[in-house]
Image (cartoon, rainbow, N blue to C red; front, top):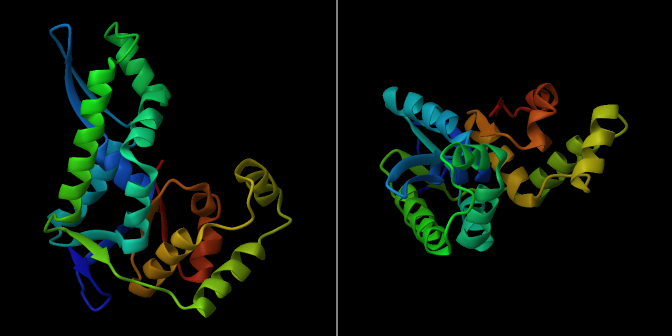
Length: 207
């Protein structure tokens, strides 16, 4: 459901990873064995969502972040899912060494369907928030001011960039505007929780 910033009751914003984990839940039968597979962090996302719903509130994300997910494609996202160590371990525990292509294709379809349904849930808000260029530049300046710290040097070496994407910065600025936490496992945010707090963004690490 699409909304602007004038709508209240939003308790939490989700980054793209959280949205993907929420949709990566599959019940499958392999050789008459029923197996439930979900991203290891998916249960924590669901717990955070259910907590908001229990309080009569909603969760959401920005339209630009939501647009990123179809752009990545279900095929790539399911490939990533199958490469996750937790998923591989779960499959191996059930004696499954390889997921048949027909099952992989079915999961791609299911993921796409779940993502479409998520966007239309009554407790989900797709927020049409577009930060100004000044807000984006202020956020970049803040982030780059952290340069030189050992943790930032290591972080940049890992990610190969010195600043979050414009979509992620926009999501952080939306959280700042609404004064609600941003649930994320992105190191751009989780490694610098206190710094983002001083900038006015509440980071809730998904760990």
